[in-house]
Amino acid sequence: MLHWLNAGLRDGRARRLESEFPSALFGGDVSAACERHVLVREGESAASHCLVRSIEVEALERQIDLGMIGMVYTDPAFRGRGAARIAIEAGVERLRKLGASVAVLWSDLDSFYNRLGFHRAGIENFYVVDRELCRRAGFGEDDRIEVRSAEAQDWFELEVLYASKPARHIRAPGELRRLAAAPACETRVATRDERVTAYASMGRGDDLSGVIHEWAGDAAGVGSCIDSFARERDEVIVLEGPVHERATVGLRRAGARPNPGSFGLMKILDVDRLWEQLTESADALRDMRLTRSPYSDAEFVFETPGRRYPLSPASALSLLFGPALPRTLALRLDPTTRNAIGRHLPWPLFIWGFDSI
Image 1 (cartoon, rainbow, N blue to C red):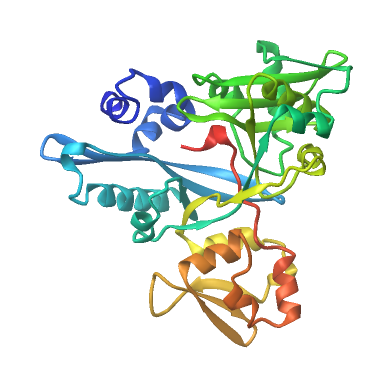
Image 2 (cartoon, rainbow, N blue to C red):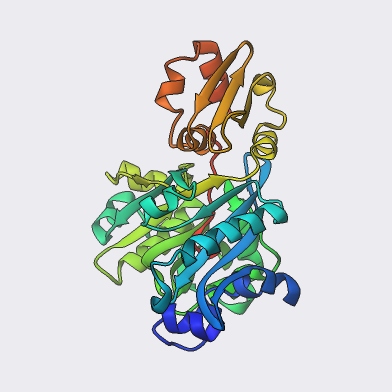
């Protein structure tokens, strides 16, 4: 199966996917790794495939079980027959059984995935950065900071830095080093007085070329790593989650504007559990609830004391993960209720480039 996927997704380069996605393909025991693959056959031939994985994501001291879908591929000989739809629907059901409360995938085929219940939601920000912007931001000016490639003794400290991110996938020990070994990926480390203070990683296999898609640590150290990459090419792209962090303050002060985009195409799988996970200990939302519509499994209802507001799947996702409170709902809520929601939602869901599949 992996040989077939490499032939279709990576131009026949043997073991390319395995080197790019070690955790997604092989994390956990053999049985669990095999269960992640959904393979649709026609007779004896493989027709379509997707990979599913359930992970824990943390933000604002809360965790949700996020289901990811990736490596969607249909053999050209079987396209146009509905095989991909069958694979995706089977993948969604498998994620439900694994306990995922929401699913996410990445694609530009919006119309196809909309029909399967996936809609764009969440927020990520991109900055286009060149050497002049780094200069104006003051990146690389601290002579006490040295930047070099990551070395074997650095990885534990880099994992500690990653664990401080405001939104992140909860990784197993040692996982960052395995992920950063992907082809066409480079990780640079900033040190001050020989102590590691920050890192940044750019590129990963065929994806994220020229994109600094993961970074952590103090702002000056991250800035020095970004400057180091920018000095070697005309420009780089810096990826940031929905929460603006101190490391990008200098970019914005220097004139950079975040280019916002959606986090991904998402589908709510278990709305009751998802609402409970996102609003745990949020007293202001205790009397509110998001539920499935009693009239349609594809629609939702937002309940406040004495009121019920029907929501489309796209609006429900926007309420929970952004980019903003749905306008149709915001106009109907009283200011007190609207402000109470705004203190806790949207929840800043994000995973960094190494973790996407």
